[in-house]
Image (cartoon, one colour):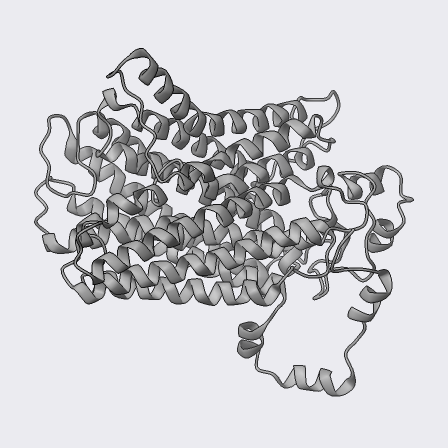
Length: 553
């Protein structure tokens, strides 16, 4: 039972039409001001998603610039002093400017609907978190452009970089707190935790992980700032930023940010195959295991394993390495095993293969590939640390997460806007995104074994190094094109150039499909009551389910 939607009477009052004077005032409010000041979770989610997609496309362009600079190994096109800032911009743009706010934005927009809640818990906190994140991101960009950041030559800009990064982290933490509280306290009557939809469950694990992780990142930033302002003796000043913050910019911490993509796959697979999900507890456990990545970040260490030392030391290193880097992989495998049971073909039935399941499947597979690459990076004897192999693992995780997020947008755009994204061109973009990720990451998996250094444009090794870097450059360019094209596809759909969507175009299983398309401001006219993990599926099977049936009418 919700602790915010405390009674049907309260909901009826909350969803009543506004007084005439208030309605007139609302109509007179400019649309931009209404968006900026809105506490509607769907508006906040769209602002996060739209900004994150813009940052992702811009970051892919930065990847193109870095790729061009690294083609011949001479590093002659750009000022060598600007390279550390560009590499930092690329990494932070992928993680904290793109993937993380993107999945949080989708969660903000969808989770209350899935839970049967009329609002997000602490919506003003989430809105403030968005603006705080955006302001911090702007400060980071200004600082990097002014020669701040790791190895930056301008002391004031280095201070601004650390400050902006801290502000950015605070904003994301605010959004995470709002999401975690929503899942824990605003569920519809009858929705116990074991009935929470898989996507909302994955968002809960991600949000709780961020509540643990982001304060640690903020603490490290504060230490670095104080040290940089006062002697730079303890943490290495600008030269020590990457080493002390590296845990927050690489694997396995990034696995936590891609976790909602795994939840999306578990969410859309039973809808695609029109079946109930068996062994839900196994899928919940799998999503929880991926959340172990938060603990890896909290530990602030790169968990390495090697063959030096005694047997006891080796076993200890292997156990810790496997715990932080392989258990998340096991979690994904558990989820995909449950999805495999759902996808088992049934005689006489044809699955409804659409863009969401294609995006979710491809994104999940790329994330798993990035996880395995991240585990290999931390095996000392392979000599992959400090090479572009680690960058390839990061790109696999982030771009895989982005593909999954695009699938989520294709799936839930009808709920947000009332229009459906055309499936055929969206599936084509999923394939283009797969090719882009393979090109942007695959060659560096090879070049890492050839010892091409990370974060550097000057290198020398045997083999077709120019070819590898040309392919990587093309991959980032194709990913920017994929994001731009998908956004254009959505804009074309929601501007009325496609047919309005039905209230339940996918024949979904969860509560977001029990309201209108688009969902009203308060989400539900009447409070839904949940009697199983698939209440809307139940409605179609036995149309006598009270509140949910009322919503469908």
